[in-house]
Length: 171
Image 1 (cartoon, helix red, strand yellow):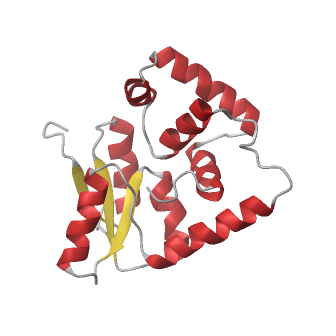
Image 2: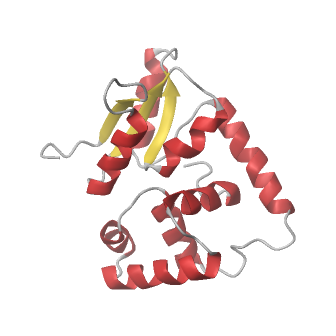
């Protein structure tokens, strides 16, 4: 917290506190640095938990040093990174979402979409306010309306909707 890192490398398998829970706690502090999860897994079931706690992505431990450096650079630039299988999951979810008769995001304006995206990424209301040059209270009001309008209950709902709609795609 004192060091304010740009990127935090987090192992998903740790003895006392797993990387997902540790990332959730780090995200709750609102430090602004991105968390990159290191894992030996690339299974799609890890995508949602990793993203729902505020990680900017994950990379397999078996990848080479140049891939790790590239992933760290992407996260430091505020973008997401993930293994190919996770990207394929993104694309499949996007196609399924697009096939729905009416997208839940169709009625959202650009600001609401951006607030949804940043909230799903783990940004606090204060951080979003700073990024969008709006008052924190305005962001809190937007979030309350989005929760009501889209039926969002907890952080995983925000992430799930953002993933399915492709709002996090290509970050």
